[in-house]
Amino acid sequence: MTLKLDQSWQAALDKLKTWARINSPWAIHFNSGSCNGCDIEILATLTPRYDVERLGIKLQGSPRHADVLICTGPVTRQARDRLVRIYEQMPEPKFVIAVGSCALSGGAFRGCYNILGGVDQVIPVDVYVPGCPPRPEAIIDGVVKLLAKLRGADPSDTPVVFDPDSAGEAAILAGEDPVEGPAHAQQEEEAIA
Amino acid sequence: MASEKFVIPIGPQHPALKEPGHFEFNVDGEIVTDASVRLGYVHRGIEKGAETRNFVQAEYLVERICGICSHVHATAFCLGVERLAGVEAPPRAQAIRQIVAELERIHSHLLWVGVAAHEAGFDTLFMYTWRDRETVMNLLEGITGNRVNYSANVLGGVKCDIGPEQAEAIQIGLNFLEERTRHYLEVVSSDAMFLRRTRGIGVMTREDAERMGVVGPTARASGVPRDVRIDAPYLLYAEHPVELVIEEAGDLEARFKVRVRELFESYRVIRELLTALPEGELTARIPRRIKPAETISRVEAPRGELFYFIKSNGTDSAERVKVRTPTLPNMASVLALSVGHQLADVPMILAGIDPCFSCNDRMAVVKRNGDEQVWTWEQLRQYGIEYYR
Ligand code: SF4
Image (cartoon, rainbow over all chains, first blue to last red; front, top):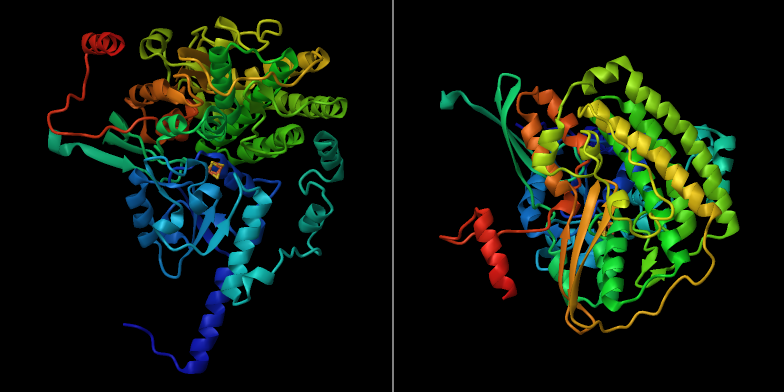
């Protein structure tokens, strides 16, 4: 039985749902044949330096709890059915982010016999994040673009906007490490130089 | 009674690992009585792919066998092709290769300590190690321009130089990491809660380790002195050797300790190389076509011995490239060690070998009716003789 609401209530409910979805997208990650490079960069986005959990993004273990499927790697013949099954197990509405050149087109593995090509050969993809592997910043940007799309904005003209009022994000903008503060970051900067 | 057997399937998508692998555990209550694994979800056909590309292109392809230890794959391949061509990389290039390889080992071991701690439910350690790992990622990015898949190697040498400022930056980074590593060593060998998950769990005796042919830190944690850097030095490991890090206990605690203690060796060797960096060219000229020959090349990847067989046929691409990665021999130990443990310990035992499926999935078997699936040693030997006749 579906709930019948009158229009204004329905609109309000939709708004609430979009709000909730944008504020806390839960993601699941599936590797359909990647070299691991993209996977560890996704993991890196969860750890202190990039820490996407502060944006409400959480990596989930089960497809049934997830809103966003983050795919890495080209799709191998073996993994194809699994990928489709996981996609089908996710509740509607669902979104797919393809991370890495491989997930986009097959990347370095194009032409190998066990490769079907990019993820979009098998399931629909909403956001493509190029790079081999993409930097964690790029992955975060991909998620932000997806959220902008959910909000109904044109994703192509929404730059990543951090809220500079929050201390951690201000620190990132200033090139500091939010965990250790300027001293540690400076040391690291020297390390980069 | 057979009907009471309870099978727990895990995977290929599962919360514990980031890569697909399918496991089946038979349990009796909480205790695992049998285990089997099905691999191959990330089999891409790289060996064949490497044969259809020329040597230069193939180098980029083999680098993408594994994103964690990409540099050692490329190094093994380059060393093999250089040997076929009769070219040797200049000393400075070899030193830089070794520095990057050791930096990669640092990043890989720190990554592993974090992931394994996460399996144990010790997320604090996971977050700390991954935060510190960013330091070494910065260093790698500073040298090569990329965080992962650095492409530092080219056939005949390296692409990137290490200047005085970079050397300085590496020293600073290593000082910081060394201090942190001391802390981690203390945590993994004294934290009471953590030790309950690691001490005496998944014990592999030296005999077992030798029988199953495990490699790398997994073997060294069981007292098997096996390290390609020492047994068959390549690059500059003969002039700037590492010391063998070995533990006798064979349990998970020992595997943690071996890997963490290896970090100190890496720090020491990198420092030594930086102070004695040979002057000279970065690359040697290498011919495009390589006369028919075959060679093997062995290097020590962070997870153990990595083996390449390369056969050239006079053209600019390889006739055959065969790769054996360290996870394959180690995987057998997981299945054997899980038996008799609680199901809850299995993720730790699996993580204990530092599995890397993308490295692993080299082969797909096409089943046809009547095909022999299990070969005896005698049959294999006969096959080898026939092949080379
Ligand atoms: S895009 Fe690059 S890093 Fe990512 S899975 Fe493919 S080869 Fe690996």
